[in-house]
View 1 (cartoon, rainbow, N blue to C red):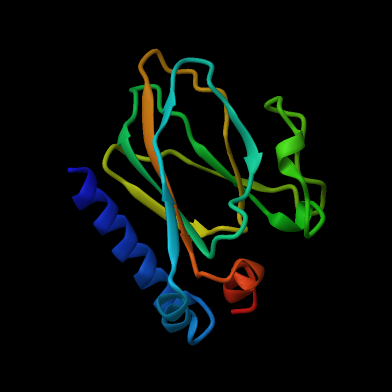
View 2 (view 1 turned 120 degrees about the horizontal axis):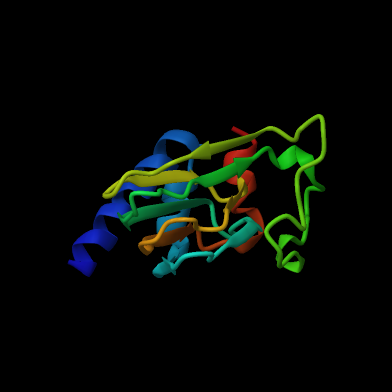
Amino acid sequence: VYKRLLHAIRSSCEEYVKRYARPGTYETSKMNGFTEDFWSAVYIPTTVHSHHVHQMSVVSAVYHSKVSSENTPIVFSDPRGAGPVHNYEQFEGEHDFEPEGPFHQQYSYFPEEGELIIFPSWLVHKVPSHRGKGDRVSWPYNYKTGSDWDSWSRTVMV
């Protein structure tokens, strides 16, 4: 099951790169030897993952294998609400960082079980405090082009 899931997510992210990244990105990643990260995230009640981005990756994804009836959203923020190289990891509390106006609008998406969300790795996001009684299980994934220095520019300039 793990191998099939990883293959499906990788294929979806490669399709994203082919469609939305700068021309030649997919071919360059294959030539340079792309790398990937894939792990599980289990959110028990009150678990939070504050604002962050996925450095050194061109595209990221999250597969939701279990959501509780009191679903917790993934919240995307306009990256213009902070500096271009912002250290989000310094913020540990749920509300330690919030985007500044006029770019403070956020979009909350409540994923369904079995749903895959794909987004550019530079897109700022968080998972607010999980309020459900049941666990929330997701599988984050990062697709890296093999060149750490220009991964983000491959989709920012499109």
